[in-house]
Amino acid sequence: MAKERIDKLLAGAGTRSRRDIKELVRQRRITLNGEAVTDAGQKADISHDIVCLDGTPLALKAHIYIMLHKPAGVVSASSSDCEKTVVDLVPADLRRTGLFPAGRLDKDTTGFVLITDDGAFAHRILSPKNHIEKTYIAVLEHPLCTADIAVLEQGLLLRNGTRFLPASVQILSEDAKQVQVKICEGKYHQIKRMFSAVGNCVTALRRTHMGALELDSALSPGACRELTQAELALILQK
Image (cartoon, rainbow, N blue to C red; front, side):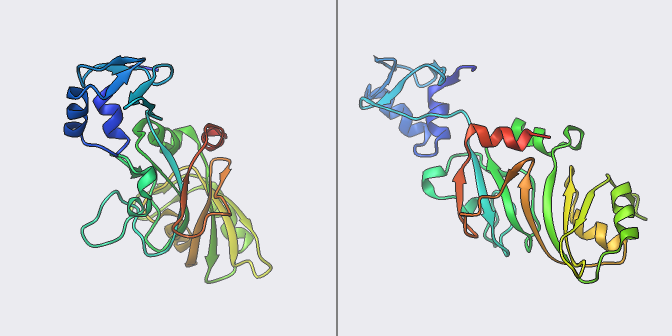
């Protein structure tokens, strides 16, 4: 792993400002592998270096990955002047600078949102060329027929020129109004627009999976937790 500035690592953890960190360095309260840090710009490799504050090792991470069970009425954004955002739901112990939702859900859509500060990872899972599926459960106003499934699974070209890649669609209920949809892209209101194009309307929508990783059933709406490395690998699984 590449080395990072100590002030950047500590500030990224979200508990102290860089100004605070410079003061701690001045007071010689931060050590790197047992030696007092004399320059806040000194670099450390968190894969094997040990950074301590007042003798206590700090659990530093280059990035954080959080699974959030998004409730309805919350916007998928890092900040908003007038509405509650998914980042606002992250508790203080998981907060750090630069958090954002990796892929947006509509305000009324619920389910799995990944929150991170790792832009490269977010791009990797959101780029359609990488074919990372996102799975949704949609409730429809009208029963879905096999002819409409065929249209959705072929891919759609809307009259305004917007093209949707082929989706995977499976009927889940006897009345054919509850369906599972898998897509590998995330255009604006995509699933709602897909079903609108075949004369139907989505009345409820929930994201259940990113890649092969399912939303933790133990998470109540609004709750979140940090992901493990094994779970991150499941997101990337095709």
